Length: 179
Image 1 (tube, rainbow, N blue to C red):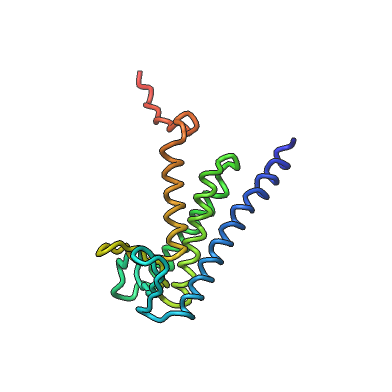
Image 2 (tube, rainbow, N blue to C red):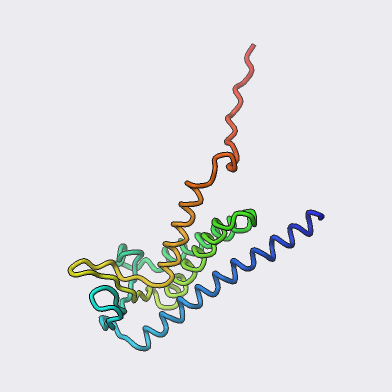
């Protein structure tokens, strides 16, 4: 097979990962829309009593409520757009045989885009998933946050579990030949 045919096949196979990213992002946006229609700030719906509930929250900051005081909308939009460009760059350069890394990048792209849409449209992110047990409560999150977390975990697994032989060796600089 010619390299052009192989390149075209790999590109079309990578479209599958982008399609998955779009589906995850669409699911994230749908769930946020549904929650915003059904609940208002502070409303809650018990799903599994004592463990899981839907709890409408708007987060103007980043993960776990950090940077939530002050107007950082455009800074966070800029960071998100840059992150998406980096993810797409790496997705294009990743060999089609590296499925774990491609899944990771697709989930990262989906999550970043899902939260970016909220930031751009609303100036804040809608969070609604709440896990808790007795007095302990995990910070409220959303589907995009879940995709980012799973994507980052898969990337960590890929980085730490891939054999060293598969990684390109780092070339050491040559020392000048002084005679």
